Image 1 (cartoon, rainbow, N blue to C red):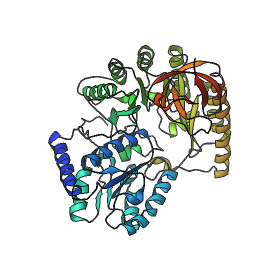
Image 2 (spheres, rainbow, N blue to C red):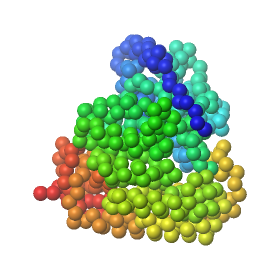
Image 3 (tube, rainbow, N blue to C red):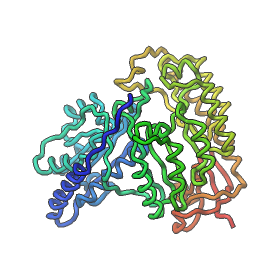
Image 4 (tube, rainbow, N blue to C red):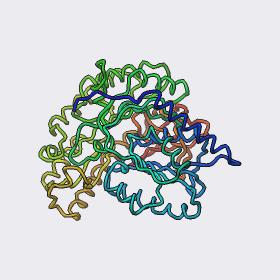
Length: 471
């Protein structure tokens, strides 16, 4: 699995920027700037990729819209983690045949993880002929070239060859949020969990140069961003492919030393690479938020081995103890898969007991979804859907009890929070986040967005806190 990370040469990126200029010249002939619609599904890594797609589009002279009917270019950045996500994408892509019929010159692009799955590419090629362009995550840096070819030659483009991936720097970025920012520190994954499609669609692990990452963080801090999240499929394995030794804990300390008043978050962490060195860095770096997403996936050792998670229940629980010894108020979240192929009711009870022991602040729960091309998709799966659904509901009910208890402990406390946006709660108009990432609804002047405020927590639900500005 060890390999040297390759970088796209600067002259190749310059060539893509030149294509942007050519497209901008084409767009300048219109009476007003044509519009683009970028629709993103899935994880924060996809959000970060879409920011680069928007950066290219802006450089090409496009404005932006949220209405696909008025868009000259539609880019759908997809997720392949679960079957439900794929079906939702395909349904929405199918509906675009109507906008294309009304505007035959509209260009429809599908990219992201689904575009790297052969069965989906075949489906798009034969059954969704209104889609003009399909490209995988490793080919994103060539988007201007693909769009230029469509604009000048028409036809369809499919750039989905199996590719371990490279690092492409120098792509322009348009960020949608002036408070929060995402910084990719690495791409791809080497873990090959038996249920997961990510290594097949996003390529092998490859780390960005630390100096490039630090320069990006410095730029964001100077621009006033207050909440910066370091992204990777497994941030804990950062640096293994770098020519000069550095691990994620080292990087975290360097980011913490960047001047500015901002919080550092990161995701996602694989437990096998979560070390005491990392926990020490988290505890000692004042800008690092006291929160970690540490996916356990299951509480039974046989199931964990079948998942190829490379740790045991006991190892995981020891890491949780190490973490809480250093950061007692850590906000701990996780992922759990219910109904993995072959999981018995007794094995599921081990997951329930782990949940009672750890008491996560929040949990992302999923019923197992087979992904074509992964080892788990071929495993015997005797448990009925009804049993899986019943177990899933028991898990959700238990976590809801724990989350409510955790939130009730906030009531009456005054907490420093970052005001990050507008609320959809009918009683409040703003949202904020605690350092641990807990959502707070409150009422205040919209000028507070992007500032830190002390909020007194007056109430809670299972999923959120409610507060008011402290006097």
